[in-house]
Length: 127
Image 1 (cartoon, rainbow, N blue to C red):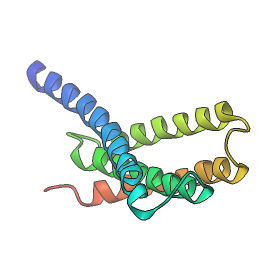
Image 2: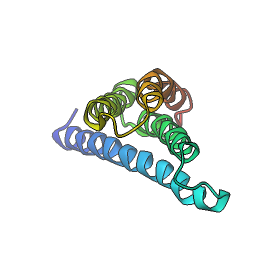
Image 3: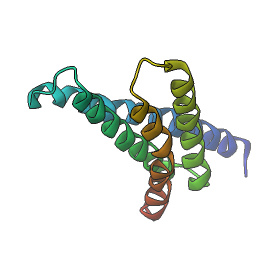
């Protein structure tokens, strides 16, 4: 592989992971944008709604990384999943008693579900 080709692959790999994290934010943000239209106030229902959209964002982000990776789709999806898992662990330890106990448990338990996006993205890659 030429030097230019290697540099292009590295740049595309980094870009793929960075954009996947933006995908996570966009999906989670869409849920927050829709919530007022449904009349969800500042309640536990709204917290559950936002958590569900965050989990869907994690699936979308891992799927995006695996689908659009220039090489090794499972590695790219795994890197995004590890970043999500690290952020979730930090959030659980940092938030303390600010959120209900069920929120922290669901956030951690949902991590394997978010890894399904890796398989989906790798399976439906363009040929």
